[in-house]
Image 1 (cartoon, rainbow, N blue to C red):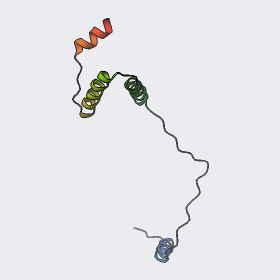
Image 2 (image 1 turned 90 degrees about the vertical axis):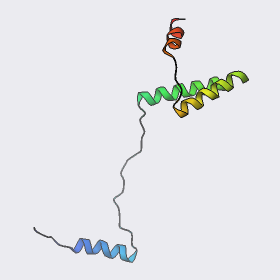
Image 3 (image 1 turned 45 degrees about the vertical axis):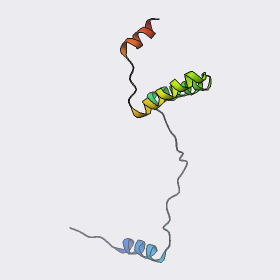
Length: 90
């Protein structure tokens, strides 16, 4: 095994020991960006529609919507397949 010069390591150690901050290379033209998956976009649209319908709901509907949203948060909300088919066919 070959060991090279330890001078760079000693220099870094001395900088840390004396409290000097090492110079970092400057970021050149980098920007942060976020890309949402199609599923995230769909969820965002559905959540926006649910929020809008809650704002326009009557007091009786608000209670039912709140109950369903709580069940969804808890992971216990289930829809009967028959109900889905009925809505699709009507």
